[in-house]
Length: 481
Figure (cartoon, rainbow, N blue to C red):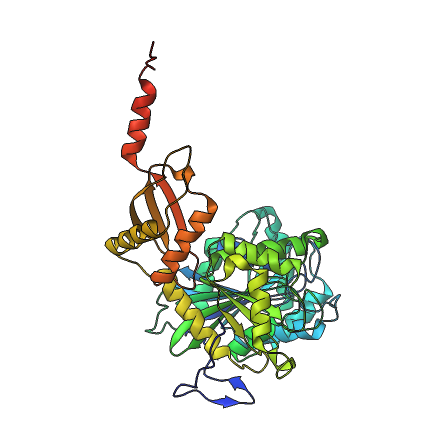
C-alpha cells in the first residue's frame, strides 16, 4: 500500500520543501575525533578503541571518506569516537574537497583530537602540514605515535615532539599497547560531565540500503539537516556504513547509510567486498530497512538480491521509491506499486513510500510508518488468541494428506519478538508444505498486529508424539502369519 501523505504536526516547519523538525542531535555526548595523514592507522585505532571491526582497514590510501562514529564508555564516561579521512591526499574519484569538508566538520565539532602519526615511517612533511592546521585549533590534542609495537620503538617516536602539538603517547593498535593509558588520557581531557547521560540505545535503527546512486546519502543528509555524508554522482562514493543520529518528535533514532551495492560478479576490489558485507551487517543490526529505488530506473538484479537478503533476515522493510519529483504528474503511483508487487511477490506485506529525499517530501510520513513497523515487530499476542486463530484456519483449510496421514496442529504460542516468532506444535512437521505454511502465515498476518512485518513460523513435533515414535521404534515388529 502507498503511504498516505500526512499533515504536518504542531512544531514542524517547512521551508524549501525540507522537513525541519527532523534535526541532528549531539545528545550532549563529547566527541573525540581521529585525524592524521593517510595510512597512519587511523581506522585501525578506531576499531581498536571500539573493540570491534567497524571501519574498513586497507593498505590503499583514501579508503575512509565519510566520518564514522561509535559510542565508547570508559570509567563511567561516554564519548563518541569519530574516524575521518586522510588529510592532504588527492582522492582518486575527485572527491578531495568533499573529504576535506568532512574532516573539517569533524574537527569543528570535536572536544578532543587524536592526532595519529606512524612510528615506522617517521616524521614526514604531511605530518607537519596536519600539525600546522591543528596549531590554530584551541582544543585538547593527543599525539598518538601508532605502530610502536614494542617499547624499543618508543625512542623513535620522540622525534614527533618536533611537531609541537599534543601530548605524545606511543601506541600499537595491532599489538594492543597502551590502550588503557590512552583511554585514561582521553577521559581526563573530556569536558565536565553533565547530569544528562545517554539513556541506552536510540529507539529505532534504520538501515538505508539500495544500489548505487539511488539517493541514500542525500536522504540521510535531509534527516540530519546537515551535510553529514558525501553526496556525489560518482558511483561508490559511500564505502562504509555510516551511523547518523537524529531526532524526530523528541525520540532518538539512528540512520545507517550503507554503501551502494554492485552485482556479485562486479565485486573486484577489497573495498567492494567490505562494502557488501558492511551493508549486510547494517541490515542485520537495524530494526527497519528502507530499500531505496530510483523511480527513473528499472529494478535490477542487485535490488532483488538486497530484497532477498532483507527477507532472509526477517527484517521489517519499506520499499522507498525515491526522486519521485522527477516523474510527478507523468506516471501514476499505481504503476510502480504494481511493478514492485509483481517483482517481489513474497514481500507483498511491505508498505511502499514515494519520496523526494533531496527536498524532504513525504519523509516525515515515511519515518512515522517506519515507527509503526518497529512497534508491530515488538508486539506480543496472548497464547489463547493465537490458538483460536490457528484452529479457525485449520477448519477453513486443512493441510493435505502426508503419507496417508493428516497433519495436525495441537498448540501454538508466540515465543519471541522482532521478528514475531510463533511455534506450532504438531504431529508431522514435514507434512506441512510451503504453500500451507504461506497460508498460515497469511492468516496470522491478517488477524494479528503483524500486518506489515515478516513473521517467523516454526513447526515443531509435539514432545509426546516424539516419545511415542521412539518407543514404537524400540518395539519388535510383529508379523502376522
